[in-house]
Image 1 (cartoon, rainbow, N blue to C red):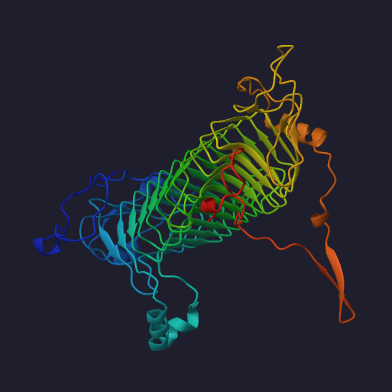
Image 2 (cartoon, rainbow, N blue to C red):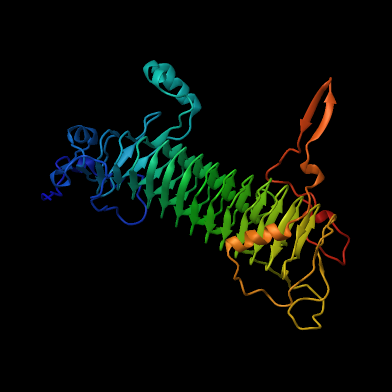
Length: 508
């Protein structure tokens, strides 16, 4: 590799940015040279060059060959578009500024790596966008009026964006119909949406900090094979992470804090959600209309309550609106209004080996059937387990542990002799094998749990699951019960057997 000078030919006191308001957070960014490019690139790595760019990175790109590395130093640099497989490396935090409908970076090639840049974005401004297109008819002819003001637009496969910071964009990173996208060690702060990833595959977002977004931290839709690992998703107004119609994902070891919805799965299947921490959200983990082998395992949902939305209300982990055939295993729900929740039409889910403590309701089920709940520990909740208008199964060979169970165990087999009655205004369910001591064994795997569901979940469909018909103006109208997500609990109150039920002061 040829020697590289660290004296920037365009550097001067006039280019100094010590008084610039934008700052890259954390340590100074000094990214290592990326040596590995997309495997199908037809060039000899030994002949690749290192090009020291001035403030005009585009000129350096235009003169570069596939596989070259372009290095930019500190100071203000121009917007650029990459049309060939290159590495663009910033040293000392060079700053780019996006403009209205003009991203700071556009990637139109495969095999591109971008690292070490700071970007000022442009926020949402519909009137300014309209005026822009009216004044620039040529841009309007090739543009889309629904395109957001994005800081980085990705249109190629095999793209890595690392160690960059983006501030104040309508969308920090926009990618659609791409494959093999890596976002690593990124900061996306104060944007409307951190990253918008649509109809893409093999996406990895790791070790990123996505904060203070006005809409979504990560908006991933109609995609598959997504890995979200070890990210900090904090204080985003809507969802920290939205996975809509996205399958075969791994969402693990993330911090989801102070969002409205920490993680929201919407019509998503075959996802592994594990070892995440969700706290101080309105909903920590929300699974809506999502069925078929979503495994929610070993997450901690603690102190989820957003009183500025609904006083005292917050859900740890919620399955709702016909979310079926999922597993909730070995999660901890503590200090929420509802620790665990299944609501409206959820069927054939297994809830096993979870710990719910110090919540208003340890677990709450409303309008569901054929869910299997066993091997869980419910203790020190105002109401340990609550069921309304439902018919579920609360035991197999074992039931659940409830610290308020007062039955006896005459034969010392660890199972209470009297059933535990599930409270609720229209509850007819019992745990017929309540545990005397907290459950600790936890030996069942996913396949065994699904076998247990098939074995024990034998109730027929509820009446409301059948469509209703009526004749209107001579035409047969078929309708189903409309969903409402999230539900509004008109009867969610702390239960006190010594007091009249549903006291008004607990309404919300």
